[in-house]
Length: 154
Length: 140
Image (cartoon, rainbow over the protein chains, first blue to last red):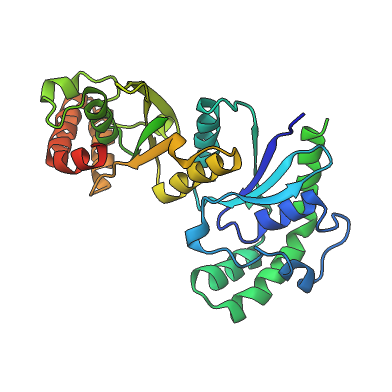
């Protein structure tokens, strides 16, 4: 049986949603805070641009055969959930999408680093900050993924 | 195939575009527009919702919707969703019908809030008539 499509979303689709999707698919260990190079080895981590906002990125499958995606929705994440759910409904896939907002897990250094790196293009300045911020926020992201799994896989 | 006319904080332009599409009209009458079901200021609750407008002569379903901001993100989201379902990108054609001045959306809402909904509708139809050529280009 085909599973759901679980879509993690945040502002830019470059940090928290990417990390949550990586935890969900097992690319990152939920129990251990990853090192900087582990985070930077994720294809999308701190690499998404404004032009990619709205684009769903496939990460893989979880143990329940659910498809895992990440997406950047700027400040309209909640509205995007509503909109794409209705679109899925008219396409005949009602109840197929499961959205998870990861923005509340984001730490202040992540926000500042993300802004510097993604918005202003100051990667050398923003990236170390965003990596440290992500490591600090990692337990919250892992707990969120745990909750999602408990909800979806039971 | 489905058509979706998308507005930002506005339903006047999408409703007029959908009406022109369904009736194959490039010059609708003001009275026809004012009688349309969703020809009114967009409310907060309208944002993100799809309204079915009808079926055209080719049996394509026509919808309208409005979003609060960033229409490009929503359009990309729809295209992306079609791709992951393995559907053709032509399954849903999203046509952005955007106000040139977003402040108008606030004025429409304000007029409705103070009980001047009919003035908002008249202003809405003025905006539509001002953009009729653009809408015709988008629809046909």
